[in-house]
Amino acid sequence: MRPVVNPADLELKPFSNGEKFAVRIGEVGEALGLKYMGCMLHVVPAGKIAFPFHRHHECDELFLVLSGTGEYRFGEQRLPVKAGDCLSAPAGGEAHQIINTGSDELRYLGFSNYTSADVVEYPDSGKIGVRAGVKAFDLANKTFSTRGRVSPCDYWDGE
Image 1: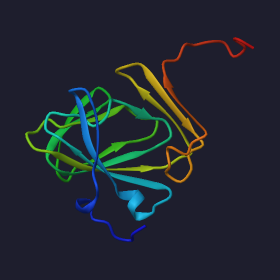
Image 2: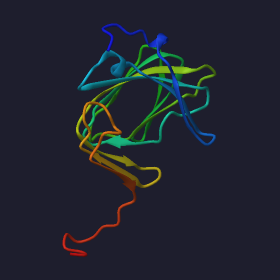
Image 3: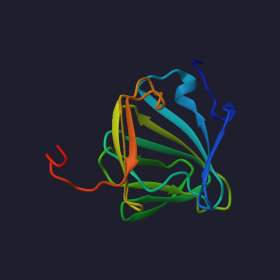
């Protein structure tokens, strides 16, 4: 734990999938030793997206654009974003996604509150993710986690 962290000094870990998704991530909140608030630096190459279109039901997210330009997909809206803009993604609100539409890297900080459980919807693919029992930021240290597609059923089905 350090009391002062400069995002420019963080080790960036690559995370990508296919041609569409690519980001390098630096864990600011973890480096600062925070227990209830997360903060990650995101560095997204030109023309790429960090994460799928999604919405959290328990975690608020706030993004601060540090440099570059892009588009904030927020529900049905597509909003231009640039350095200095703050983006809101309230828990249970609209699905959201940040897209680098510029010709340079898009750098932003993502802040979130940590909860012990969350449900995440992915409207483009019809998936739902659920995690519970998360302790102290450590998503690997959870008591339950799954991602898939839900088939509706009666409460007593299979009992």
